[in-house]
Image (cartoon, rainbow, N blue to C red; front, side, top):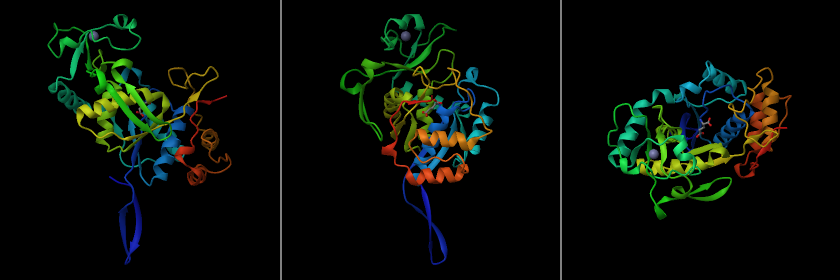
Length: 310
Ligand code: GLU
Ligand code: ZN
């Protein structure tokens, strides 16, 4: 799919492809949207409109124990209340089990995955870098019922270096082996890991541009590694500023950030636009606020953050 604009020729309306841009907003339905998620949605929506592209919605509901009842419906309702309309059908990760399984089969056929029985305790001493303990195990069966995660191999040496360009923040280079090591793609509880699901679904939805919070910057090299192994394209990346509380911690549902008050979407939107250094007027309707912000929006002028909520 491509961005569309419409022109008239001989009285017939024709669609021409003007840009190739598809991005997505991908919230996890673990609770209501808060100001941090609204900021990502507003900036993502503006970036898609400014590019003449599509802005898709994907609900990342692969972690049922962390889901709040009604959260999905609440997210859709909250986006619409703030004038943030998305394009096309909403993709639910809970419906994508077969696709994640096929990706796993592909990785296993290339001998790029192994079963890992390490406990959190085993890994604690290694500062977040997997020490390779179970690498030799490959996919050989374990005794029935042995709890284990699946990890993808990360090569050593030059092959572990992942480079990418962020549209706001410039060039990055990560040594995946030294900084993270082999990482989990299916958890011990049998649930798919975010890293695998996000890569498979970004490809499924034809995402050309990932626009998300800078808190996910250190996931990007893992996702690029998986894209390489699965033969999938690497999108462009733009990592947005995040909102932090008084202590400097990222606003998050886990840390108890309050859901947005839907009684006053105009004020919510105006606050968010002001954080993004865009024109904001809480008296104006949400659609006109968004149009004014769109006229002023330049991705390279986004503040890098972090942005203090109070
Ligand atoms: N579901 C993730 C979150 O809510 C976002 C994933 C992404 O944008 O890549 O933090
Ligand atoms: Zn292990």
